[in-house]
Image (cartoon, rainbow, N blue to C red; front, side, top):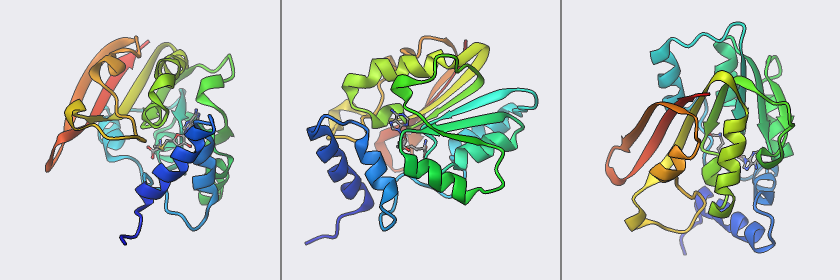
Length: 213
Ligand SMILES: C[S@@+](CC[C@H](N)C(=O)[O-])C[C@H]1O[C@@H](n2cnc3c(N)ncnc32)[C@H](O)[C@@H]1O
């Protein structure tokens, strides 16, 4: 019998959570289990986010940023390094705890919060949504997308990265990849919407979408 991959384990935990009508409970089980590799974790910032910020020569001095579903903190640390006063949140307390432990000297404010129930006043000059909406079941998608868009301050910027998969080769989630319609659903003013192809995988890609509010 083949050994389950970290992705298989995560999908198993997700299935158990979804069966008990708890669409986010599996994240805490995943991050809280020290023996389990977090399948999406990459040491260092997401290369797409880094490339986007560098191409724009993004300078966050004097501005605020919010990192959605921040996991173990690598993207939040990158954003803070650009000068933004950065808040980063995750629904899983163990992820937040591990991020704080990984970056003890960090200036990032790491918080436990649920995207679907954010503090009413949260508005930021930059909002980074990297691969969190796609980790929630499709039934919660509109609500999740609206919550991300609401967190952008007037005149602010939203950057979204999300998985695309050709619907013809769809398979059970997570993740539940985003369609072009989903990306348009953030409802702010689009600056660029690009589908970055995945080398060697003609059915896969990454959405990179930048909006202003
Ligand atoms: C696929 S992971 C992506 C993590 C990180 N953004 C990255 O790109 O590596 C999705 C993350 O979103 C968090 N998450 C899922 N649903 C959430 C919610 N409703 N509110 C806040 N965080 C959530 C999970 O705990 C997890 O850390």
